[in-house]
Amino acid sequence: MKQAPTLHSLLPAYRRYLESLCHANSTVNTYVQEARSFSRFASQRSSPCPHTVKVTDLDAWQRAMIGSARIKLTTVVTRMRQLHAFFKYLFEGSFIQRSPFTGFPLPHLPRVLPRDVLTSAEVNLLLETPDQRTNAGRRDHLILELLYATGLRVSELCCLDISDINLLPSRARQMRQGRQRSCGASGKTDRDQDRQAHRGQSFAPCLNAGEGPPAFRHMARASNLSKDG
Image (cartoon, rainbow, N blue to C red):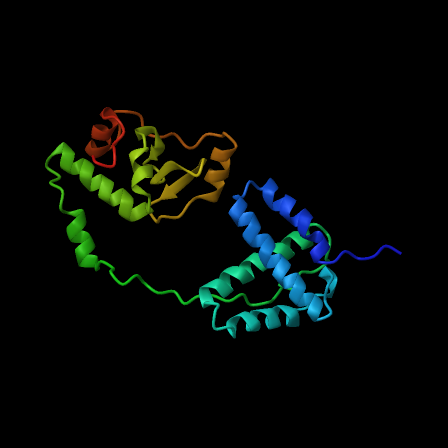
């Protein structure tokens, strides 16, 4: 009778899977280390195989980390999500029929605002600082609006071309980590358009040089900005 694989015996295959996703070596090592640490813990609780792990084992593992004075809550959240990824791999690889994480409440950090947050009045004052009677002022106002509305990084904004702007759905297209994504005024990405861009399909027609508001026309005639303007 074929013996069921243990959590520990599946770690090499899990490492190869993570490497196939082109993760950084440090990320792969961290995820595998978390899976290895839990496999030892589960073995001590007589749950060495994937199908023998229960919700109570996950709860005990989480409580053990929370009870440790050396482990911060942020670390607990990160490690539980890393472990969740391991069991997702086991489920998708048909090593288990049901993940013990199904219905298990993952820990969440309380959402807090940064200490130095601008008020609405301060944001409006900042946006109205450029003199919009000039082309340069309209350009600077547009830059501030884009940064504030989409959450773009300065380097990403500097790489935008006029062909990346589509006024009809109010979206901008930019590259991040080698992949295209589409940003709207809400700062959220359109997943469908992102997938189309990644497959090489076209977006909706974007602006050509000379079209759109004066600020866009001014930027269309200029070369890409630098971080220094």
